[in-house]
Length: 77
Length: 244
Image (cartoon, one colour):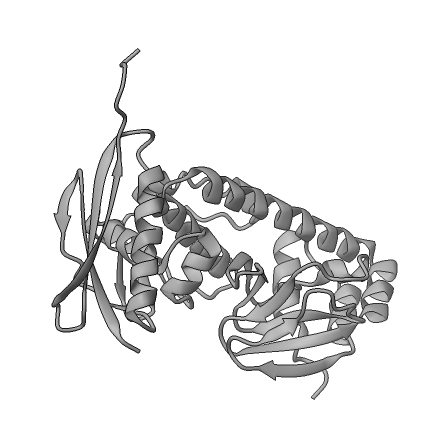
């Protein structure tokens, strides 16, 4: 099964994942990254955040990035 | 192959709740049934089956689960030797979820009538079975709280605490380490998380110095810290032999 690395950038900075995840295809890797971005959006209460998840293949070459912005534009109160 | 086979994990479990009498012990050792060895990732009981026997886990690791129409699996609970994950089929004719193996497992299928007879003759054993299904409910409540309200790394910390205490209670964990029989995908199916999120959260728990792992072996480096992150309070497991 192909292996993928997921490099997550959020408010907390970038952490290079040192562990590969086995997934059947790039399509599955993309779906996993999107799911994780959605799951991460829920975390830390209602804090705004910019999440980017870069997907790398087994040679650690970038294949694509999932981005999610959780933001509020408008009156503060 | 009758006699001292099957009953051992069940005897151990019941013995941790109350001291079994000689008569009770001998009735458990004479429980009829057939032993089946089932490979990993196979169904033991399928949703909508109407079983006529209960399965007692002798060896292995088993889960209860359901699959959505879109093919997504939700695991509801994990079961270890001494558990009877389809005990409710004794009273509910049609089973509303599936039971499947996680690892290769050895199960004793006991005819319902034999379990009923055991309960009629030994009300303390019937009480213990009832108690067990109540604890199932308590575990479901804890899991629901996690899936509904906790962050990923906290859910995982809670699951690791639960599995460690349960495995330790039946002698399948060391002082502060155990074989985690689950893949990251299975942890994700249990906690409603993507595999990559499980992977990342485990790394976070490692980076915090709470756990360490090598292969399937999981070492707990900081039990208190892990319990705090998971908001884990073992009361709901109602294990008699408490762990410090």
